[in-house]
Structure formats: structure tokens, C-alpha cells
Image 1 (cartoon, rainbow, N blue to C red):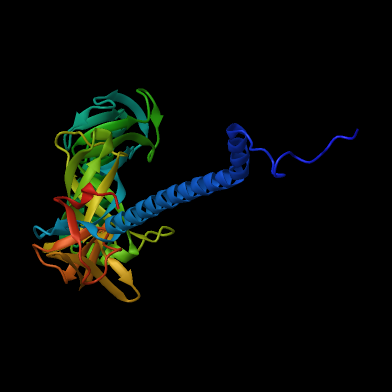
Image 2: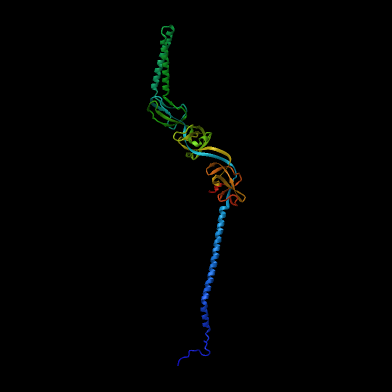
Length: 393
């Protein structure tokens, strides 16, 4: 018999157990729960991302604002506290020369029989340095003196005969001429004898001896070199562009490196009228006292030539001057404002420049960030310095 598939009673399904109902509900709601969780997580993530980005953007804005303030607003100033002397000068090399430099030569021929002074010795004017054998010259002088006696005696007799009319006038003239010739021969012999003694024409030092004792010399041969270094000369080449301003120079300072930078004062004694051939510089000579004998010929010096000297000038660092086209100006702090000051420039020296007009003592010159501020812009003075050299432009 076949099984009856209908449910008993009124035909409805029997009630399901509570646990099964809950499971069915859970599985039906699970996709929605998962979707809702994903939406919640997405919202949380987006919210966090937005907040982080806003903080980063704010930090960037704050940094940009801070950087802008440092560059364009904060400045360093230097007060122009005083006027000072401005010296425009040039430094040129020079070389020391002896005041006098002479090579004594033999004036007569003969053998050197005596040296009274040697190399390095000092001599006075007229002091004997060396002697040449003078025996031949003494004999020659004696002969000429004897000839002079005979000539004078002959002239005396001739004059007596001429007064008596016993001889013609021509004989008298001849006798007088012979007497004069004999006298001049004596003078020449004396001079030759004197030249056997070699003396110093000026006081100085024997720098070099060219010959040895016993040498047979001829007239014109070098004997010794004599230097006068009690006073020395300094020779300096002056460029053509500066020669006119050097014309009025009276004294100048020279530095000698070989003497640990010791300084000496030189007095101008000569400025050439035309340049040195091939060098195109004019020769300037200075005289320096050398009584201490510290300066030696051949030493190099550095001469400080003052070309111009001004009193009570305003002198500022060159980097504080701003050039725009033909305009030259500085930026000055007036209270909390930056003010543009047109300036007139004067002498430039090193890394500085003279201000002829536009700045006064007491002005607060902007020395840092002066190129970033504009006229009338608000500024903050973060530092005031006493010496502009404290900054590295």
C-alpha cells in the first residue's frame, strides 16, 4: 500500500525548532551585516585619512608662512656710528739700492804693493785703500824737476841777453815756452805719483776686491767696489695711471719682509719724466736713513703709496649697495619699515665704498636680507651688529 504523502491534520507543516529558525535568520542577515561592517570601516578610514591630510596641509602652510617671514621680514642692521678717514692707496714692489755705488779703478799702471782695506771694511772719505808701486813715478818726477831747473835757468839767461839786444825775440819766446812745458811735465809727474795711492772718494764699505796683492794692473783695471749704505735708495715703478697723483707725494711707508715686516719711512727724491724703456712705468726713488745698517742693497720691499686721503667719510660694505639699472641705493630701517635710500658713491677700496650722499651717521643700514625687502615693507630687526665684518656676505 502506497504511503500517504499528505501531512496529517489540516495539511500545514509542523513547526520548526527554535534553533533552526535562528540559524536561518542569521544566514539571511549575514550578507547585510558584512556589507554594513564594510561601510562602517570605509567611513572610519576615510575620516582618518581626511584628518591626517588636513594636518599635513596645515603644517605645510605654517612652514611656508614661517619661511616667508624669515626671508622677507627678518633683517639684520648695522648702525652707521661714525665718520672716519679714508685712505686710497696702492701697494707696489720695490728694491733697495745703495746710496752710492762706485767701482774704483787704477789710474796708472803698476804692481799692487799694499792693501790697507779688505772686503767688508768701512772707510772714510779720503782714506787710503791700496797702493801701487811708485818708485818709477818718483824717478820720473825727479827727472822732470831737474829738467824744469835747467829750463828756468836758461830762461833767466835768455832774458838777460834779450834786454841787452844780443838775441832775437824768438829765442826768448822759445825759452819761455820750454820753461812752461817743463813745469807742466813736473805737474803731470806729480799727478801720476799721487795716483799710485788709491783713496776712497766717499765714506762707505768695501763690498768687493777684484785683485790680489802683488797683481800687476793697468790703467782702467777694477780694484775694489765701494758702497755707501749709510742711506739707501728704494726704486719703485709707478704705473702711468697713478703717476700724476704720485707727483705730490712727499713721504711713503715701505715694508721689508726680510726684516719680519719692519716698516720704514721713505722720502721722495726723484720721479722720472718719462717711463722706463720697455716697462712703461715711471721710476720713483725714495731715500731711507740706514744708520742702523739693517737695510741691504738687493732687498725687496713693498711700498704703500697713498694716492688720496679724505677726512670724515662714510664708508660702508660694498655688498649693501643695490644696483638696479642706473640706480644705486641702500635699504635703511626706519622703525618697523624698510626705506629705500638713493646713494652717491665715491672711492672704492677693497670690499667697501665711500658714500658721498644718501646716508648719515646714526642710520640703521640693513646688511642682511636687504635685497629681499621692498621700500615701505614691514620688517623685524632680529639682530643689530657693531661691525659689518661680522657677517659673511
